[in-house]
Length: 192
Image (cartoon, rainbow, N blue to C red):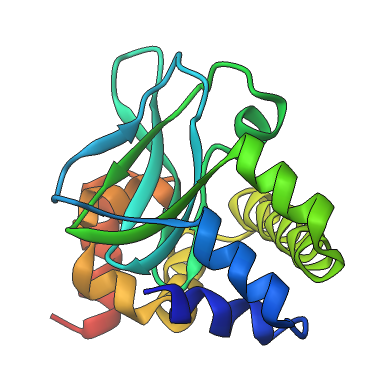
């Protein structure tokens, strides 16, 4: 499992033997079953997770008690409630495995240690943070400017694996619509 992480890191920065040893020593492999909440709203996020396989989401509850999915992640990628993990404050979201998930996890203390020990891992950490910021800005812009149909079409093109592995109610919530609206859009697009 660690090789997936190393491949992802090495797609951005070169790693030496010491960097690889740090990753091997501090990223812990874990397996979680489908529907397991691994980080809870109101608690300080304990880990940053690297998704090796499976699908995972961040969600919270609106004022009416409905689940609102704010992020869906599939391999390879990192996920946590970033701001809350970084600041070590209670999260406003839950982190749930949508399917069985093979993950690598690292605590904030250990992450801080390895990025202080390795310039390459520090550079990669900055790159991940920048990607997260860019993703969130693009998502906010899409929610504000695109029609529901255009958001779905864009999602289809950029995340085809998610469409086949994640329940539609989570996708609808993520796209800022209700499941009935998503069903109508899907029928219109497929012509059925």
